[in-house]
Image (cartoon, rainbow, N blue to C red; front, side):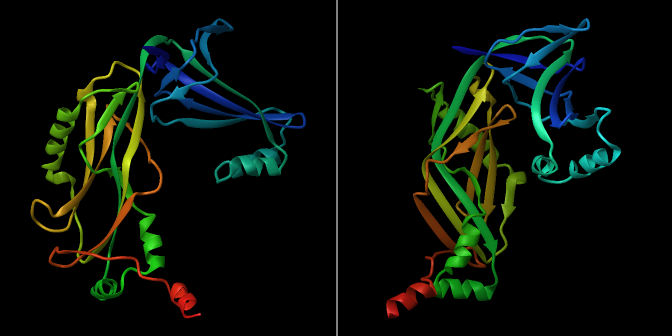
Length: 305
């Protein structure tokens, strides 16, 4: 088994990250401070001392929490008042780094450290992966006139392009392959139990207004992965289920789910282009009609020539 090294926040310590900028002989730095963190490093780390104060220097690390942070800017005495005002102004907008470069400021050093009473512990490292069919669902409420037009003529290509890139991704089957460190582990019973529990929860149901256009892309054997820093416990896997209801009844919905391990979300890694796509119209009575993308006018013009 592989191991990593961890330092967690404990209300007595904090993570401080500084980025230093230089323009000729002038220097300023931005200090980012976090009091809620869980630092993970691959290489071993140790304590250092500075002016009788203990700290942990960090080089390559990952913070697996999503805690907030505070930011402050510190200037050396050589930086003019006008320059300070300009830097503070552009720090509140977008493209801060590129805007700094335009006025001559360049990054020359970054430092990270944990200060305060801390404990370094060695933790197990496990890589989790799930393989199943991924679905990317996009839907759009349409008018009765649009419904009739799409049903008769197909979905215009430009409208297909717009809606097909706006979907939410998730797995759509519970027959999965699950691995821990590339070795298959059977958690099928737990996944099915979790799915049935969430599937019966009315709080997760979102009713679609009808008529509705749905575009669903399917990716066969898509992957979702997650690194954890503890012994694997299958009972900690839960499913965040999304349901798209279009009529009352057992089969009147689409669903997708996102796997979560103890508040950590898996990262989807699609296997490539979608294998197939369903384009569906759902009428006001909840009936499903399959349609295709209409031929573009450009194709018709080229055929005539």
